[in-house]
Length: 82
Image 1 (tube, rainbow, N blue to C red):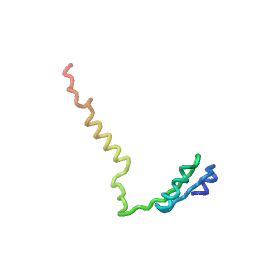
Image 2 (cartoon, rainbow, N blue to C red):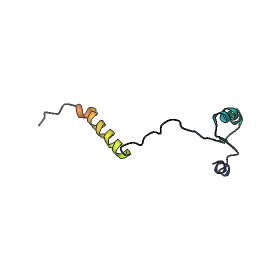
Image 3 (cartoon, rainbow, N blue to C red):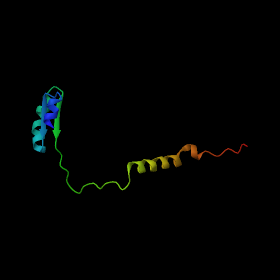
Image 4 (tube, rainbow, N blue to C red):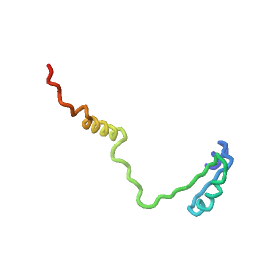
């Protein structure tokens, strides 16, 4: 990642794999004039988040259906004009 950032024009590139390294190096990073590239590796603790049981398309279809049912236009009294 650092090589890509350097070849993309970033003069200063920082990489931090540990929280302690980030806390120590952050002051130097903030003193730099930009652009500056900073990569922070993050480790997740605990159980992984489960994948959704439905697709994005299914979720949006449910949202659209719910919105169409709760729309104020659907709650207006029907006209009795013939």
